[in-house]
Length: 421
Ligand code: HAM
Image 1: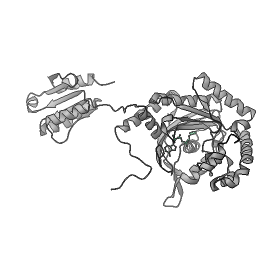
Image 2: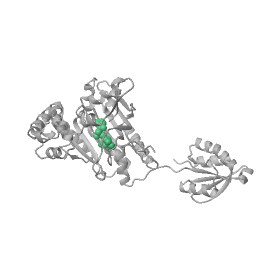
Image 3: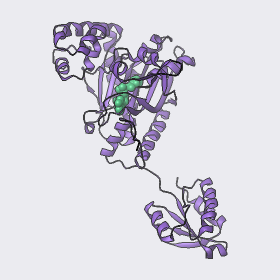
Image 4: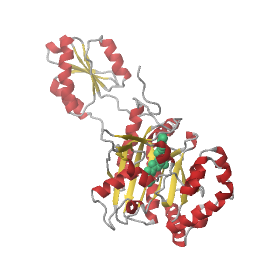
């Protein structure tokens, strides 16, 4: 037997209806904020991710699914969505200075990580990207939209964790402070961190090796907040004020840095207590230099992505039930002729918007009724020799058990009038 590759999973009913519920919530809510859907390829040129996410990040160094195609070009299964959205906007010349662009996306992402609960090699994100404003109000609205989205799906008590990396000047000052803190510890750091210290000091803070983590979580570790320029400090204050005005609670965590190089200013995560070690339901932040660094105009951006598998886990723990819709009507057949007639009747009813349960092989009426009951069907239509002889069908209201005989036209009218909203 061939099984699914490690770190991937099948999404089966009834869980798949929870996925549809999540996607539906996203589409409805994001549309209210003016976001339109964008769909980008699942694989891109490797260079795109190396340049945007950063060549010294864990994602690029260790986690990408990179392969040569048949012509020897290096391609990578996308590990995240932001880089592809920026690439698509550049390619289709969507950026122009001062113009707002709002996109959302949903789809699979790929990272070669060690699988565990809430961490997969193929996982799914729903994300948004807003381009064209550097206003702190945009940061606050994006964070609020993420929280409202979790609330709409049924998650209880998501926690917003907030920090800022500041602007380019603040980040250079922070890098210098971090480097002087790290230098005396260099001999005790793992080889990866020793390399990171040389090439991209900020990334030492992503290290998962316990001895390195212990050093970087000490109270003496420099915090980004201490290196902020005055304009970066003002931006961060304005974000917090706007969140307060929106009544979005948040916890500030000066150690949050996020594992992608493109962030500037505001960064955030939403965590959920019931998820265990992989507790980030989603994360995001502002990235004011990315578009320019990718060869485009000076257009700032801010966005987030949520992990759908983790959201499903949180909803299951909150006992949010799958929301699959029961069939409206079951077509019960007494004989082979009725099976054939029901094929046509089902086609008519489905054309009227009804969800119809039918069978293809003859079973006892009792067995069909039992399955209709189990599926919580509202109506049953029974056709046997008797009914056929009189050109009629028997319609049973499964909620109350009443039955009536009707013509095909009457049946279609009655069922269409009772269509669920
Ligand atoms: P990220 O924090 O790398 O950000 O991923 C966002 C979310 O995807 C995580 O919080 C988590 O819920 C989920 N996730 C990540 N890796 C895995 C995994 N291996 N298994 C299951 N779920 C996972 C980004 O990807 C940025 N592009 C977000 C962004 C958009 N920033 C600005 N705009």
